[in-house]
Structure formats: structure tokens, C-alpha cells
Length: 137
Image 1 (spheres, rainbow, N blue to C red):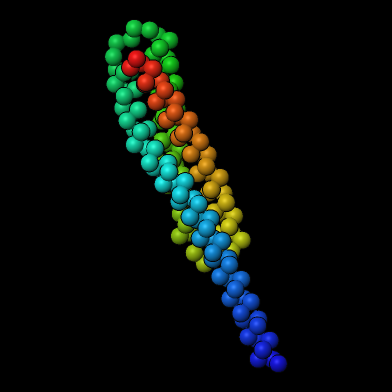
Image 2: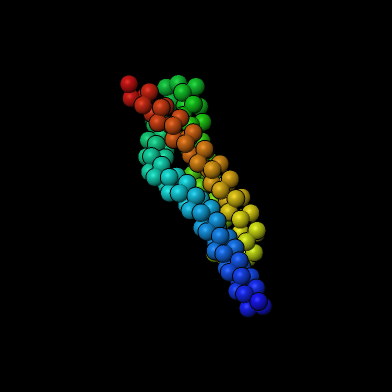
């Protein structure tokens, strides 16, 4: 009977640990999926930023237009900087050998942070793309 209890206890612990690792992997995968999506938009962000930089170097015809261009450019820079900051701070290896609850909290916090970066990136890319396409008409 004792052997059976020990075997049952060991299998419960193993199952719990396996479930914990699965949850941790799923959270990390969600974070990396958003990261990859953002990196795909990064090319557009850089292209738009270069286009705006070129336009800003031209002589000013309209001060309000120049101010608008600078505002759009600042949003692109802010989104790019937010991504850089997140990438430098994100380190899943720091969670090695940490308790499950701590890992889950870290990944949940990182998911919120990367979703914020994603929102900034989407807004900046959308606004700059619309602005640049309206200038080419």
C-alpha cells in the first residue's frame, strides 16, 4: 500500500510539473509570436521613417505641414524605441530555476509589455503609411 501511495504521489508531482512547464512554454510562445509580428512591421516602420526623414530635409513650404511630419516621425521613433527597450529588458533565461508562479508572473508582465509595444507600432506604422500615401497623391 505504501508503494502504491508513493507511486501515486510521484505521478501527481510529475503531472503537475509537466503541466507547469507546458503553461510556461505556452506563455513564452505567445510573447514570441507577438515579437515576431512586430519585427515583420519593423521593415515598414524603418521605410516610413526614412521617407519622413527625407521629406523633413526639404525646404519648408508650410510650417503646419512640417510640424505634422515631425509629429508622425516622433511616433515612429517612440514605437521603435519602445521595441528596443523591451528587447533589451526581456530575458527568459533569467527565469531558469525560478518557481513556477514567479515565471508565470514574469511572462504575464512581459506579454502586457509586448502588447503595448505592438499597439504603439501598429498605430505609428498605420498613421505614417496613411500620411505618406496622402502626400504621394
